[in-house]
Image (cartoon, rainbow, N blue to C red):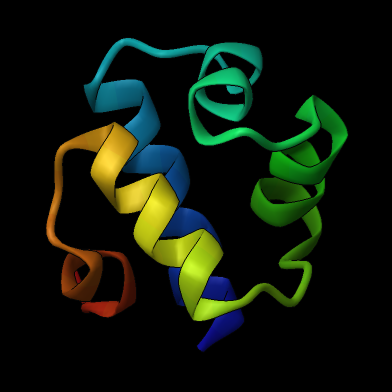
Amino acid sequence: MLDLFRRNVQVARLDAGMSQNALAKAAGLHRDYVWKLEKLGTNTTLDVAESLALRLEVDVATLFSLP
């Protein structure tokens, strides 16, 4: 599940034309957190997932869905 989530966050971020730093800043996160999330599949909370989805302008369910 984490692998799917991390890939979907990265794809949504790239589709939105955002850098990891820009997404982190918009979501109130440290840029290293976003990097770890995308590259290592770091555990996260639903609050963070919702914040990322909001900034990426996608439904949070999209971040957990198969492509």
